Image 1 (tube, rainbow, N blue to C red):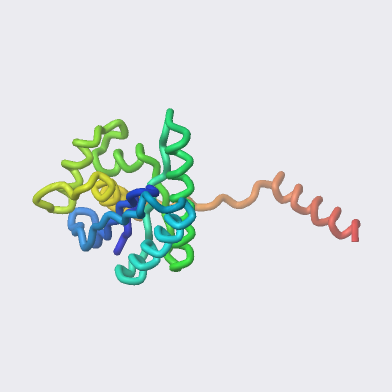
Image 2: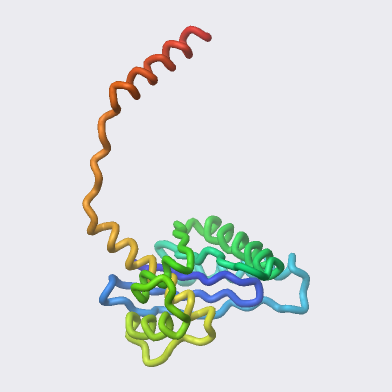
Length: 188
């Protein structure tokens, strides 16, 4: 499965295309998409959208895994990253790429087995899981790699877990549905 990991940002967005299955993952492409800081936000958003669309066209991912935001103090930064994230989601949607979203704790759990892992731990595990010589640079790209790995692992785990059988509706549910249908017919 070809997963495009995305670590959103306005100034720098990390992307990483990871292919394979857990245990045999490989990094196909990694890049940092940058927008010019001297331009207006609107121009930067347009530029970011074009960069993401170009990446989708050239890399042909099956799915994109996008990191959700987690900020506790800096509202201004959170707002700008949220806006950039919206542009990225829009671009992925326009490109017809399915999207999965993961919060930082889910990414750390999938990569390190521990949701409170620190950046160096995530970086070391990313290097091991992708069979790399060194961690991708800058951090935005390394984070994108971790998000892509997270998706691979979570999809694998969900495919191994037994499917729950949906229970037949209870007698109460059936009675409520029948009563609603009678009311709908009577109101016509």
